[in-house]
Image 1 (tube, rainbow, N blue to C red):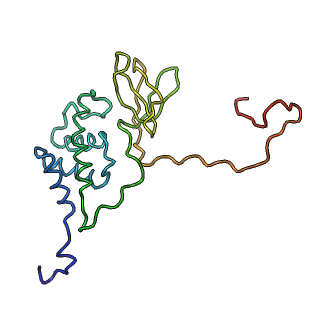
Image 2 (cartoon, rainbow, N blue to C red; image 1 turned 60 degrees about the vertical axis):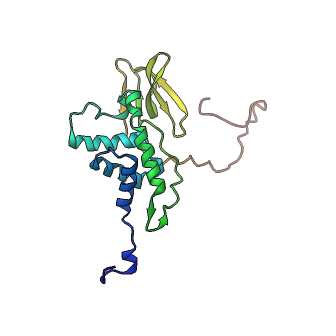
Image 3 (cartoon, rainbow, N blue to C red; image 1 turned 90 degrees about the vertical axis):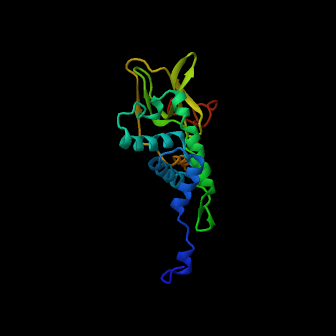
Length: 206
């Protein structure tokens, strides 16, 4: 130990190098610059790392090394086979994050927020129809490729074949689940003396 170091400084762990080494062991053929991008994901996203996160990190790294690469487009625009290539990297990042130790202390409890769904967050716009906003993936359905829209819990809320005039608008990725609407304060029941057969409730649809 150096005479200028305190015992705490001498025993500290280089947590950045620790996660880099963990990833290098799991992804031995990965470029150093790309490993650093994945290490950042392990630190900030951890077990919540998605395929979209991995692809975005790769696209930023590839923009520097080969800006004309044909796959440097949003994840939803890639074929399912190409998107699956990111899965082993996402799994390696999650595993590395799970083994990460900071200064000899286990990594804090993960954020209670569930992992973000796969796909990109955006809005599917169909001419003459309602718009659908959520997590969008491209999947084969009914013998053709379709844009499938899911909510935060992964439930399918819409699917559409994108034809002429249709578009997918990419929106900023929300990092936090929206809060449930607050219940209205209790009040007097609605009473209609003119018609005792009607329930004491009302609707905006009436």
